[in-house]
Length: 289
Length: 196
Image (cartoon, rainbow over all chains, first blue to last red; front, side, top):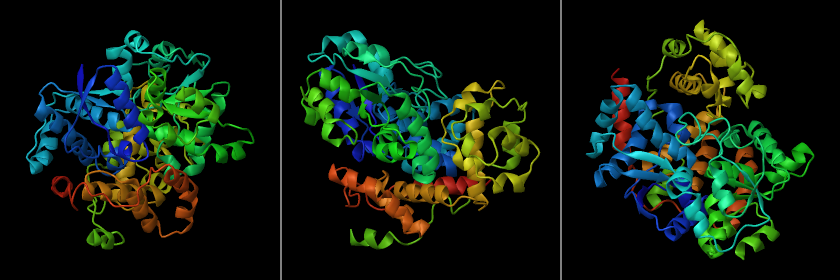
């Protein structure tokens, strides 16, 4: 199995443990990742709010680079926001006959052209459907027995393109977590928004959205995430939210590949466990083995 | 390096300055023309409680072309792009895209009831245009400078300290690319959109 790999900007900064743990887990699973050379920002939510063409062109630049290396490239993306931006290019090309032409007019400035051949895949899709729970279970050396985990999917891998899960009641993470020996915390928060970028520009609103999620995860030992922005919103403001709500919402927040890597018995530094902002000492010890 | 430092505080032209017109209120009205005012969008929206006009009301205003009312509302700036309304709309309308289109139109026409979001988008895209990739410290620095309000960086200080302690923020500027890495792409988009 091999994929082209698009880390995205966050994975070089605040989400570097998602990058480290994804690479470590994929290597253990025998999945080969080839980083797209010279990749650039997907446009995030900023480009979309300023210019649709800019947003599509910034994303398509990366698809063109991957396609240039291999015509039927599959591109693995761990960040949900990057995933949606890159995935959207295919959606737009399908719906609007002129879109690809306009995008390529822009890309020609860099001598690039996109033909529409890249399949964009989120990390969770690849883990749940290509690798599969059985193969993951086969690599488990230190089961996460007794650990109750709330799977959190966020928005952008579920909607608007429901490529691999139910956009209202997502389940795809459950077989993976069960394969690790963990218990699933049943909750309805899995596909509810954390507030995303509003945490920067409309903090009060995002604190309420994130607070309601943290509160409904009560009873779980940890929330598993698959997106740098969800991870940051859920882990970085717990004290503030606890004061605001008058209830203790403290809970460990981990990226899914960190949990998988811990169950595989990988060393903690390869999983970036020191980078997590919300990880109880007891759980940290357990995951270190 | 020194040259890049000295550029940080300067206002830099971005796509936002060029006011690209890839949207009009008429086009957004077409996007929501089939809205039957059922309110599923409002009921599905996590931010609706904080909105001065609920999404359903906003779509009615858009259908009627009530420009003043639309752009004095903060509603579309409170959309977090979760796509739940789009998923559930019984008419199958691309409501989240319509919210984004309203943001673009407000920025293009300089009708900003909200200063923070546009300043953030601008700082972000400036970083992308120059370096190809976003460096969080540099980008947030631009955002704080644009807001000209010392309270904003102070509010982010606790988070910054936490991230710094874990070695996740490097104060250095990106070295990967020279300045203006994606200049050609930004320039071409501007040219095409102004040409319309």
